[in-house]
Length: 230
Image (cartoon, rainbow, N blue to C red; front, side, top):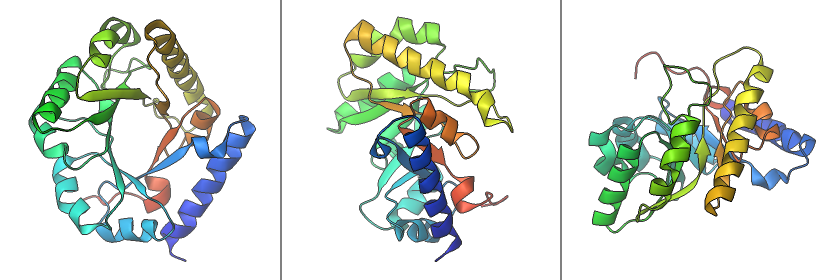
């Protein structure tokens, strides 16, 4: 068994244990294997374990890598998407995790409509208020949510956030439960289902699952440290 296969097996065990602690169905949590900066060969090793869901954060890298990977995989875009990359990104990805502005969401919907696509996306919320992070503030989300769910070719399926880095995963818990509560508020206020919460990474995904995450984005714990130069 490759190192990648061993790591994925260990991550899945931890996902299942965290879901059980929270009284959740383990099938309600999906692992997004974040393959950014890692080659197509690493993706192929991961797929050999049954992993089908992968995350990338740079359009140019994904354009070169995805055609070299096994067919039939589900690809999620998890990074900051620049306006001039929207048309290139749409054919590559099934879900966009990081809708961080009304302008981006409108642009995605417009281009998708032009090309006859219907796309799924999650709204990125900057719960922690860090200046270095993208996303809507909770207040901005409340104001803009009606216009976002009205976009014709973009189906909003959930919310996404990133917790501040800490060596103690418990410090991320308030960020995660606040996103969960915001999701509940938006669902009730607008009668729009938001089944997905994208939160939790290599260092804190177990806490995120305990707080309701349905999509955990794990890269380093699967593929190892990212190469310094690609």
